[in-house]
Length: 255
Image 1 (tube, one colour):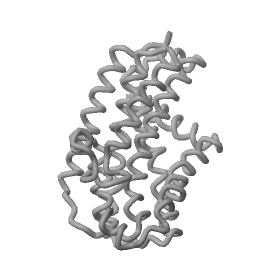
Image 2: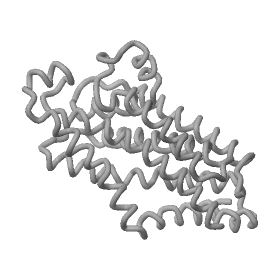
Image 3: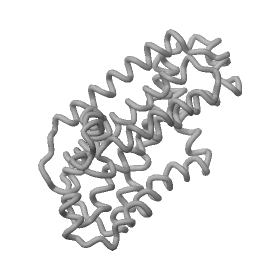
């Protein structure tokens, strides 16, 4: 089982690095959010920004949120790769071997999450280019990366659970887009939740993207950090991994 998982996991990673276009899009998409959306407040007075975001540099506020929403997108792309494997016959070839459906799911979930980690150093370098300075300790860096990894694992598992029973390549994409937009905007990734209407605040208060953004933002801005957020994200990742494993082991279909 271990060798089967490792072989499939390595394949998932190599698929990314052997496809320059996919790798480029993985890196460029969050950078564009930081460059264009972050710069949209460039002419707003610092006093106004501080009253709205708690900092006079909106890019500094935005960076943890963009990294968090990127983990959501990574999960969606991982699910689409499963549909591709089904359409081109790879999944059928794997399933006639002793490899279990659960192992296939785990390899894809961890492979997808690993691809998401590529974005972290790129985004940190981009933030440095925009003038953001970091004063994090090694423990804080480690906690922030762990939080993003948990978020990536959780969403990868969720989208793979949606994809597993389906053989229609359009259905997972539609479901993923339906989930992605509310989760992204009903979180603190782009704006503080205190400005939301009450129904959006209710969604934000249980949204894992919110907890990841708040944790990372506390580290970047040097404000108080609630370390319980990391525990919540770990619980989210664990629950989604169990859900995805159970669904894939029972209902993963090829055709």
